[in-house]
Length: 569
Image (tube, rainbow, N blue to C red; front, side):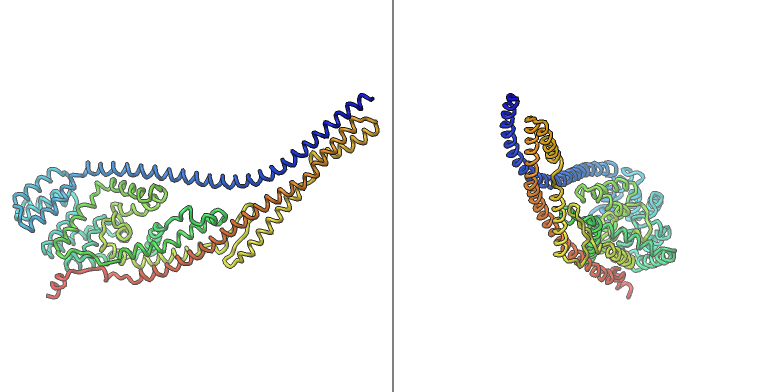
């Protein structure tokens, strides 16, 4: 028994030292736990920022590679165009060159004949080669050769040949002949399937290049077409829909760094972003149409120069054989313009590629000329005339889009910070919302503090210590008594550590409350900025409408002064 007591006392001293050490370590551990929980919150926030930065880098890298690929491919497409159709360019240059050389009289008829026959052999199947031979024969009054060459040119491409000779005759003031060629051209046209070169007709009307006779034929035919098309069921709705899609293609994107806090805190942001992009479109509509009508129209003073510009457009832009490669070139150019953003480029090109289709109806041709002048081969004057002719359709589409945009903006938005979510109306009291968040954070903090209770190991140790003490006293066993005291000491340390753990939780929750309050403040501040910008951009819809309403067709059908004098005489 004495030996048991001795052993027990030695063990008791050791246990007391161990418990004291455990007490100190537990105090330190509780302090570290509080710090770790704070650090964990900070690390989670940093990880979210890192993930966002990583995804942004991946997207940026993808766009850079797409941009580089498009730049490489467009060079190859242009090389292919030069390789396969470069000889067409030589014929085109000579066509206008022959006319200009004839003006100054420095080239002999023999030279003109020789050069035209050379291109005839160098460009088989190309309509312009026999047309150039016919022109050379006409210049030297070789009727038989001219007739054969004209017949061959018409066989290869009747429409372009008719336009070509109509413009050439207009250049030399053969107005009646130009009108007859133009009449033949119109007689073969279907207003539901016009070829792209019809843009040259609009260009001639818009710049006053046609004489009174040819202009009368053109104006009468176009009015008849519009009358026929307008009588079709659903025509007005289809034009409004087409222009609605066209104007929608102008919709800009919202930069990823704009309204960053609102973007992160509001589940409603996707709807808000789409509405903001749509309302910003008003300014781009103003910029596009304002740019078309801004400044004076630069029209050459000499009729010869004016017609030469039209001839150059006709022979350089509308060859069907080159069209597939021209479409590839335009698509790649759109990707480059969008800096490698293939999704934005595809959306934009889906509308622009209509200007590169071989045949379209007359209203679509007007749309292409108005919105995609480069692809359609339209001049600034043609753009103005096309917009004027389409004005009512554009206005209807613009008003439809404006109404849809105004309906799309959410009057109430959801704000979500952590597990807290609140609906913010247009007239909401931001200070009151901040108090609601603070109260929520306080309740959540107290829930966490209240969850720290005397449970688990310390509770089991207390119960076991009590039972062990009773058993030890009953059995007069010092060992059981010592173990019971050790268990009770452990339970006591656990109980006394509850206060420090609760204090650590309160510190962590106070930091979380501060961060949440700052995030809410930033979110509500950006919401105010968002609504102010939206209202400002929406006001521009009326500005765009007034600008479009002021346009009329008569303003943009020009006439040359010499034509006016000819009519008066």
